Each structure stands twice: as structure tokens, then as C-alpha cells.
Image 1: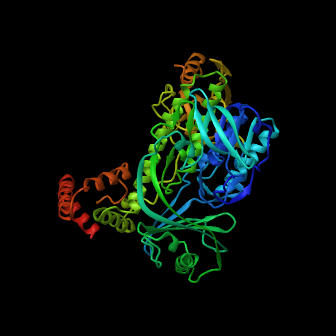
Image 2: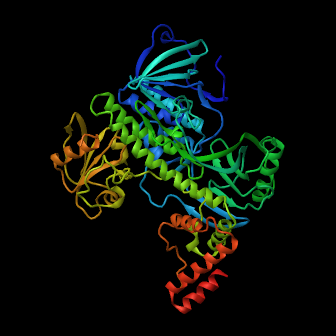
Length: 539
Length: 59
């Protein structure tokens, strides 16, 4: 029997019995366990590079419920590179403005899109099942174009035998169990990762003693498309904080912070949830609009990560490797960046163009990213849920002052929203011979900028790129790896500001995940070859 | 003029350090720490008129 752990919103990869379920185990170069945002992104990226990849998921589609709703610009830029972005932006709710309240006083508002000239907005709100569906659509399109991606639904891994250079998996299906082998096994199987347990690996961190009630509500309301956040909400029984945020399909995400000592059963009673939602909505709209409860859940969270994301040929990505509080949209967004970081490295290793130790840099870079996310997320949570009387006194002093004085507003913390991680100073990055703008120094993710009738990130593709602005570079192959030259004769003003600064021209070496390796004031093939060698871990 | 515009670099890091300084202290000890901190900062500011403006701004 194969138990169903949750209902699915969309059936995306129905189970079919295949020949591999009989006879001896087949070896696969890459097996990904888990078909969520991280596993699907990784599969799509690898498949588009021509590396065969098999995804195993214990269900046959996207799980019901909004779960992740806030997708950041960096995630959309990655999805755009993979051909899955347009549907997301079209379906998603674009928002930039947030308002922060303390009781019934508005403390301040913020605008997340301070500069123009980016293809993608700072954030969209989109229910996670849609995000997964659009990735699957892109996978189907890639498969039709020959990408070697296979997804097996209702294939549940029940045992793992790690032999060092490969793993043997026992997989349960509606037709019974079979075995297969994986050179590389990638665990994208979520915060409760069964693979992590099968390997006996720990997942330590800090438990935050709090419960959050999520109510996704279906209603026609003319509240603006903004993120509204309350400290000590003025409406009845709302707990210590509350959030109201719009999603597509007339769904509104409402969050209440309930505290630690609660009875989950009682709080999940629909009548009790409706009383809370009624109080919130009537305080804002003056009456209770008609609505339906679409999805409700109570969650607690921890901030934690695995010590090491790589264990030989078994690699952890996304929630299986790290977990944060939801404040800041750092869960799914960081997981997608894990996939983006891992895909090109795994691809080079499997093609014999890089040594397996390149995969250690996936771990060091993304462990650093996880630490940054955990730090930001812990700070936000400590501000929202003061752990001591003095902490609460300071928190309320900040809120009180922020209402009157601008200086206190940067101290108000209802979640620092996800921005791209940078890898400044890490091993794979080379020289900054240009000394240009800070935002494009080696280690940073490339910022977008208008170019001709499109945007520069669209020109970079998913391989190494040699971006020459105001000068000419040639395609360059070194150590078996090709860097494609993209020559920009007439940069837009925004591109000039972000990539040149005061310089007349510049050459950038850019990784397949669109992080900047090194930059120079002019084109020198030897310098580029040296940086490329560093970038693939051969220096 | 008292500066009431944002002026602290790394505000989140500062706030965390401030709260952490109170860890393990009881109410009286915390209040005493705050008092010492205010006096230290006031000395750094020095300007008598600014200190009066700051007291008024915080009231």
C-alpha cells in the first residue's frame, strides 16, 4: 500500500507501471527525491543541459494548500532562465507596497521596487501548487524538445543503501516495490526529509515557541494589493501579530500569531477561525464581506540547518537541508537558489569537465546562504515575538518611536524580505580588476537591466558567459568549458550605471547561475581562462 | 538639530546586540544597564541642547 499524506491540487505526473519495476536495478546518473519547487527546478535545469535526470515523488502532483506564496525576483529570474517565468508572472499578484501597523495606528509603509529597469517585479504572490504546475509545464515542453527528464509519480523511497560512489534505493509503488541505483542522489524531500532520517543525519537548530494560524480565504474584497502587517492587532482575539496578503484567484492569506500554549484542535475549529477572520475583516471593511475558508493550517517552525549539505554522493537541497521561519520569504526562494547553484556544478561533474570536489562548493556557498537566512529570520521572529520583558519593552519603544520619528523605522522588523545571496570572497570567484559598481562585484548575482527591447539577464542563458560592454570579447574555451561571448555595443543607461559606473567598458565572466566570477576593464583571454579555471574548482 | 532620520548602519545587528546584552539579567539589573547605556551615549553626544531635544523626542 502507498499511503496518501496529503491531497493534491493538480495531478501532474500520474503513476504508470513501467518496465524498470521488473528485473535488476537500473543505474541513473542523478535521482532527485521530491517533486516540489526545488526538485522540479533542479530537474528542469539539468535536463535542459542534456544530463539525464529521474525525479521520484511519493504523490502524483502538487500538494493542496498555498504553503509558499511569496516568490522573489531572484526566483523569477531563475525561472525565466528555465522558461517557466512568464506564466508565473501572468498568474501571480504583483505587489510592492507594504504597510505596518501597531494596534490601530499605521506606523509606516514601504515600497519594494525603488528602481526601474528590471524584467521581474520584486515579488509576486502565487500559490505554491501553481509554481509547481508551471515548472512541470516547462518540463513537459523541455521533454518534447528532447530533454532527458523523467518524473515518476507515486514512487515512494522506503530504503536507502549508500555505497559511497552510488546509492541503492528501494521504491514503493501501487504495484509493489522495486530497486534502482543512483550515482548522485539529491534529497529535495522537504523539512521532514525521510532520506535525511535514513542516513541518520541530524538537523539541529532553534525551536520558536509559537503557533501561527493560516487561513486562506476566498472573497471578493477591494482591499488594495498590499502586504498589511499588524503588531498587537486591534481586532478581537487576533494574537500578537497578524498579516493580510492577496493571492491570485481572489484568495487572501490571513495569518494570526497565537502564542505557544494553545489547543490545536480547538483553534482549527472552523467556527473559531471564522470568528477571528470576521473580527479582522469587519475592523478593516466596516462589515464582514462574504467569504469562504479555502485552506487552514496551524504551524510552528524552527530555524535550523544540516551541518553539511553534501554527504559524498548524497546531496541535500531546499527544506531538507535548512528551515527558516516564514517571515521574509526565505524558504522556497532559497531552495530554488540551491537548485540553481547545484545544477551546473553537477552537470559539469557528470560530463567529466570538473572534479567531484566542485560539489563541495555547492555546500559551502549554500550553507552560507542558509546561515544568512536563519540570521534574518531569527531576528525578525525575536522582534515579532519578544522572548523577555525587556525585549518587549524595547520592541514597543521602537514601534512607538517609529510612529513619530523616521529613525526608528529601520528597526521595525516584520521580516526582512529575501534578496539574492552573494558569495563575495568564496573560492570559485576571481579578481575584481575593474573596481566598478559594488552591486556587480565578483560573487554577486547579476542585476537585471534593460537591453534593446528586452533585458540583459535573458541574454546570459544557462552556460558560462563572457559579457563585454563597450568592447569586444570572443567565445573562449578553456579546460573543456565554453564561455559564450555576449557583446553589448550600446549599453542602456541602467546597464551603464549597474555594470560600468565611471568606466567606458568592462568584461564580466558570469557563471551559469548568473553569479559574477570576475571582471576586468578590457578583454584579456588569458585572464579569462584563469578565472574560468578557478570558477570550475580547478585552480 | 537632533538627527531623527535613520542613522544606524546594520540596524538589525545593533538591535540584536542590544537585546542580547540584557540576557540573564533581572528587571532591576536590566533597568540599571539601560541607565548606564543612556548616560554613556549622552556623554558621547555632549551637546547640552541636543540632549534636551532628545529627551523631548522620547517623551
